[in-house]
Image (cartoon, rainbow, N blue to C red; front, side, top):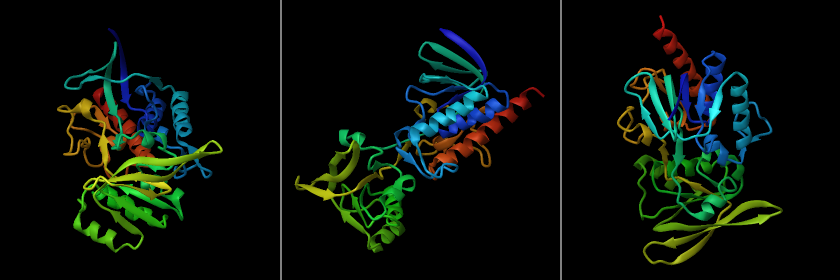
Length: 315
């Protein structure tokens, strides 16, 4: 098995990982970014990004990530397009295995992100970024004056639905049960909102859409009542998945400290994990904000933390 040693290895290639790479490269750490086989993080399934500072006209998600990568490479970061399948972080140098290659590192930044929980429908995949979204704060603005559906019944769904009422004329919450799981205070807020409607005991069976002039758009959803089996159609210009997120931390189970939902626990005011020399940045440690700009910010912090920690090892 081929092996190579590095001062710093960054696992993950979204805004957090690539910002960490930029700062680490500028600090002459020559970081290696293990980008995975689908590089770029969640922004690669986002069509247009309008809330990232510095792009007043907006920018396509994949293009933004390409720019992040180019900037990091310009200062000496390198990327490998493999998946890390095994980690040994209990002793230094840290060992990371990817297929037939082993990387050893003096420090590691984990920026593996989180994935939105989805329904697993083919139509959901087809219209993702074209009317289907898992982030209301990212995409709500595009649905000004339109009607949308939010799937779910927990805090995430109610938060998304409430936020979307700032833009949409109607928000229909589709829930498979006949009562919400969200906290009582949030339920009350949603029920009082005249723009929010509830569709109980129902699941989304298909997302309906059309393609005009080469552009895809959502037109509605086909629902099924779980008690009667009766199908219904619901008109909608957008569908938001509000069934939560799962941090991509399976690889670190039993090694790095996590909260009950699997997010990495970092020390207050830093990006340090419970293992010295291992840092976490972006959505993998953030269950609250989950924005590209906040992920990039913690990527910067992780690189600075890693640089300072590496320096302290040689004092």
